[in-house]
Length: 212
Image (cartoon, rainbow, N blue to C red; front, side, top):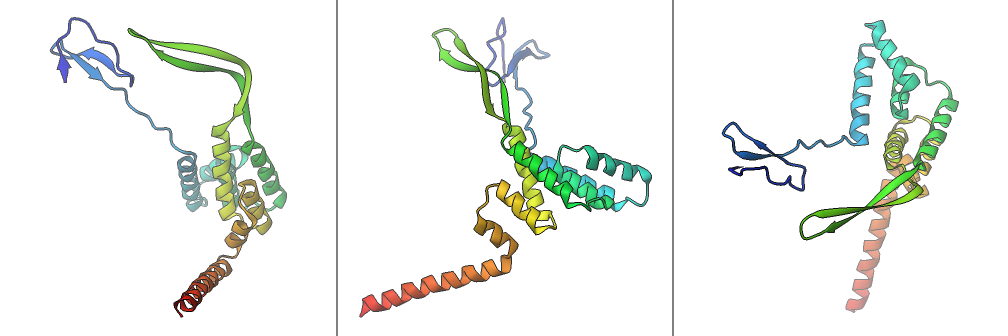
């Protein structure tokens, strides 16, 4: 849709800009919307790349070098684990323990800085933003915490060592029962079925008693 105004109208609230088309009329050009990938999507893409490199590991030395770089320097501990496993380097439990300790710190990471708190006031002719500077302040580093949580979930589901899996679950805040059920899925399923059967049995018995 276009409009024949002498001058451009105000930009809209969603960041759109009014521009003239080839006919000299004004058109609202909406900005492209970019959705930042989630930490889960980023990690899935990285793990997929590592598996691809692992499949052709024996074919080229460059592949091994790429895996070495991921293992040595990736910010994703899950990627380090996957690359190290592909290279046959995950031999020491101490390495995993160190990673879990570092992820514990990331789960409680904070940011310190000067944060602007904006209050929006709508006047008769314009919008006014009042900025209140709170000075030095501390707030959670949600981006780093989200990355750490995604890392821990991957390690929780993939580490071969039971102690490390339980430690990852504890850092994530999982209950002891949830971790136990994760470690003993068959037993947990049977226990759940038995409990359900018992509950229905009690309900049936109570119904029969009340019906007398």
